[in-house]
Amino acid sequence: MKKIVLVGIMISLGLLGACSKGDNNSSFSTEMERMDHSSMNMEGLDESTMDMSHESIAELKSSLGENELTFPKVLKPDQEVNNSISYTIHAQQGTTEIFDGINTETYGYNGNFLGPLIQVEKGMDVTIHLVNDLKEDTTFHWHGLEVPGSVDGGPHTVLKPGESETIQFTVNQDAATLWFHPHPMHETGKQVFKGLAGLLYIVDENSEQLNIPKTYTEDDFPIILQDKTFSVDRQIDYDAVMNADGTTGDTLLINGVVDPKLTVDRKKVRLRVLNGSNMRSYVLHFNNDMEFQQIASDGGFLNKPNTTKEIEVSPSERVEIIVDLTKVKENEVLLVNEDNTTILPIYLRESKENSLKTADILNNLAIPDSVKNKKVTKTIKLAGMGKVVTINGQKFDPDRIDFIQKQNETEVWEIENVNDAMGGMNHPFHIHGTQFQVISINGEAPPSSLSGLKDTISLKPGQKAKIAVKFTQKGIYMFHCHILEHEDNGMMGQIKVN
Ligand code: C2O
Ligand code: CU
Ligand code: CU
Picture 1 (cartoon, rainbow, N blue to C red):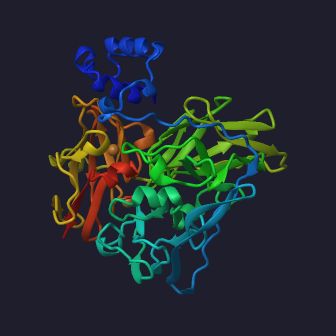
Picture 2: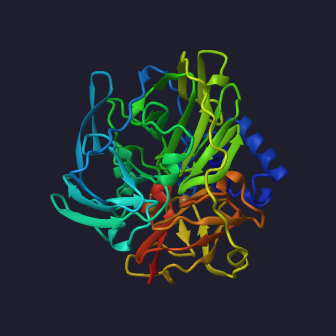
Picture 3: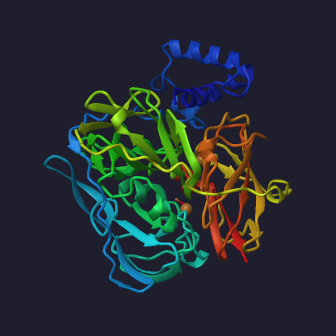
């Protein structure tokens, strides 16, 4: 994380030419170490030299484990007949007691902070009545859902304060952990930061029948990771803490709870992690370094569990993991970040239950050779930092269609995070209305963690990925960087599927 800041400083000082690009270059790291050990810091630099650089990424505080985690309520349908289900969702504002005795102004769906969990079955016809009770424009976007562009909730489908709309779609994709959030032009970062984000689970025959933990809040837990900075009076002052390269905070919330802990029976549990942060990425592992199994990515189950000791979750990505708590000797284990910051202390209650034997075949995804061998027909170049972020050299224009693709036709897109003179940073690239498959990253087969269906792929500077993209519905869809401030600054384009 520090590297990014230093790259910025070095650019400002014109040092980049002297140490070349790429952060595995040895002269580069020597240079950085020297700077690191010198007395130079952000405050010491003249503001005017900083315009291309990052402000520092807030350092995340460890969870003190003071508050038991809570979980979103499952949203009750207005009606459910045969295969049809309908819901009402209000975007609203109010106050939430995030800190004891203090009312923090927040946004939420059908509540004052965050949203409920919407659970739908594959094949269902879904009707959702959307109501904007905010004092500002908003949209309702279904992240990861393959629905027609007209109901996808991109920046074109604004609801003004007091307006409402009813949308309908059929769920046509496999079981997955998806989510919904606002998408109004230039305001997505702020509205998500204030609390607008909810979960959408799709269940299907496979997910119901698989031998995996699947009882909501008993052994199957949503973990929505978000970092925020609170003002001295414990308010969420987005404008005060906004950073053009992604707003970060020193305080981690899980499902809206500060200093969270989770108390569970000692058995196998499933954690469905959603990174709902504006820009922060997490590399999760356990403090005892134990293995766990990743069973799903953005768009659903992997073919088989990916056994690993750590997993990266970039903004907007989901990973589902199964953790065997019978393997923990003590009564406590910590879920920690890359730098060992505590994300979630897990306290274990004794349980008589035997550890469930979990499935080792989960899905049967494949990329046919005929697709792998296709020529690249869409090229995306992600570039820049701060306000100068672009895709293919351009900023978002709501009146410009950047690409056209045929419904149900698979095309190979090449996404490149351009390692230019600006040094660059990671960009989590997301496409609406599709779950794609990663063919390769820098010419190599993707790691197991990226072998399943994805709607977001995070690329480091210099990385180039080939992905197989198919849209099953028609309409206009956004593709963009999911660092929300990059999106708000125009690092977004649109594709028309016909
Ligand atoms: Cu979470 Cu445009 O998306
Ligand atoms: Cu999306
Ligand atoms: Cu970006």
